[in-house]
Length: 267
Ligand SMILES: [Zn+2]
Image 1: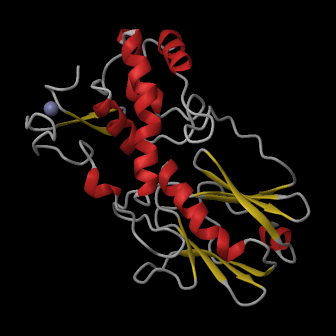
Image 2: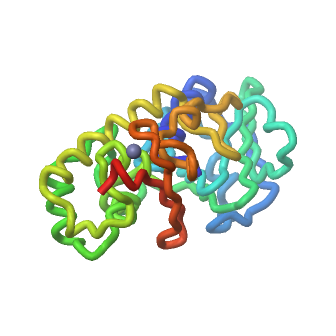
């Protein structure tokens, strides 16, 4: 599932292809996404120029020349591909043709994505973005006091608290902070909350520098895979030796999501 580093990589690779370009034609092949693509979607985009592409948490926001905002969420498996759709994946839901011939494809095999146009700035109930505003240690500490009964990993993945973290980077950040994913937030010590806040940005920056993580589906807008999956310290490493102490990494399912941790290094 694309998280902050993947969405930011898509934004950066998409930008040179679409900025300043006018949208000539939009074809919606299948409206059935997490929320149906609105009937007005094509007419709302056609004839308009893309002024820029921003990101807020895991949302991509393309600004249009009339003040409208074209909002895209990649969901579980959404991809925006420039040029040609990715081979072997027939699920092209939306196809956008720009003046000058550039083509953009939205593919989403699992259909948890979202695509719509809003008249102005969308109301997104999102917490601070770790790469824009950073994660403040005091803020995270206060959050662990307020939501003490929640498991710390679940808290990190709550987009209203911190925008952009999903299961991969929550697991990776918790390993670096030496905290078990299943611990109740209220059981963290102040120093642990501070350490955790510090490693969140560090983890995401490293992943971004590697072009994100490609598991099953993720590609950037030019169809390239990310490389951070080769540097996971715990995620998807059940039974493999911990990179620090060689203890086998444990796997546990909490709240329907996979947690990975080292029973020796993480407390
Ligand atoms: Zn270890």
